[in-house]
Image (cartoon, rainbow, N blue to C red; front, side, top):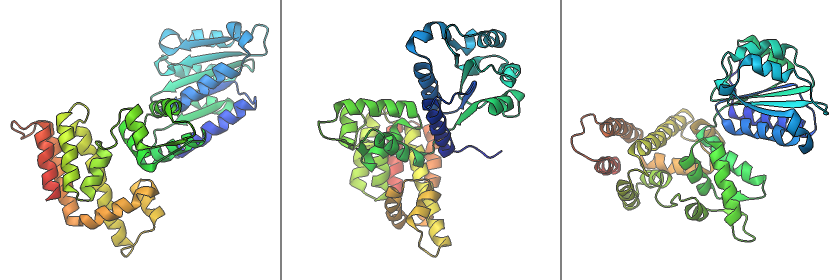
Length: 348
């Protein structure tokens, strides 16, 4: 079975949501996977729109996996609705439901008068089980996966486009880098920004993010990577001084991790250019490096500043200082001192 990609998650989510809006209902919805955002979106839509408000008191029930059992759930789901054509039973945190595979007997012949919604977060249900196979046959299955870093920028742009709003690429990259692949958190922060944008301004900038979310537009790992890639010694030293004075806000392990990713991409670009006679199309480079096309030119400049040999040396340094930051052969140096020393060796 082919591995699910993030774009598959988005496409399936949009299809299921469109069917729900058109009142094309299925008796079973198995919503599962690593990314909770789309699971919550479908679950919340069903809870708010399938039944009329007057019907929900008697015909909508929300259960939690740790507080129920499979026999109790089956008994509840097989009841007939009261003065309504259907009932809705939503199981939140279904990953805590013990022996969930025993639901196979129910999903094999689910009653059309019940909509059973199973919200299974953190991982996917074992696809080899009869429970999964019957759920896929008689209902809808949404499997969610986490987006890659290069997919986050596009997701943020698309999310804002639906709200007739735009965002600068740099602002999007800073937000994605700081919040990671947590779509719920990103959506929440973007929704906050809508309420504070000036009248008539529908474009989010790095200044908006700094002022309203608290992510510095000047002092972050995105700007550090940029300064080091450009071999801008002054800017790099200014940023690491700020990091050194705020170690809790800028953990060294995160800084090294982002630098490692940066130089791994620079190395990959070198080999791509070598394999294609020194020239790579922007779209191909973006795909291979796992970045937004907007940033390809930055990596081109970085590759010009760091030869293959120097890039390999930097990667070796990053591994060494990662170990030292964790206490191996470190002596008494603080994380701030280690970071200054590391950046000095990278730049000189």
